[in-house]
Length: 243
Ligand SMILES: [Mg+2]
Image (cartoon, helix red, strand yellow):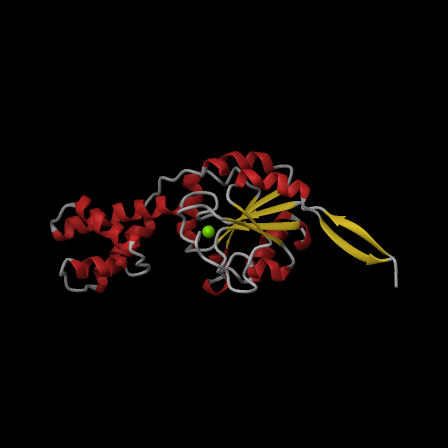
């Protein structure tokens, strides 16, 4: 049998998801519903707070992608595709008021410039850019990649946006980690490329109860980003080489 030696590959780059990893996406949703409720209140001559409550209630009951339809149905308002489009546009284009999770606020200056630091985010690019601006993240990381810039079909888990962010951080996949919250798409593509993966599992966020399908798991799981720096320091990848 050949003798083996071990070498260590240190992590040099940290790639972060945005929604529900760095800030609570529910803040964006609430802001969007407030804007849409205001528009709807004007159109229907109803109270904006009442309409906001109805929108939020549908969302909290698990409705996704058809909240406006559901509320119009609830109010016995005939479905009007033009009004739905207007509501969606108003929701997406509102100027969000967002705040980072406290552990994310703490983490960013801990990591950069010790590590190459970047953000990779899905979602309509103009919406994600407004979120980044509201959070002041442009100045706090080295690079930001919006997968939507490459087309809807290149959203995660497509390898294209990961490779673009790695290129901009001058990092090899084997020296990088992706940190995200959604096991449906955050880890499978990253792992395929050879990145390590960490799931941040925050209570009361959209994906906190999702159990991953085989192959969609992260390599490691944490409940606060405060645990990330120690894990990065301790975590080196042992690689076996026949001597
Ligand atoms: Mg996310």
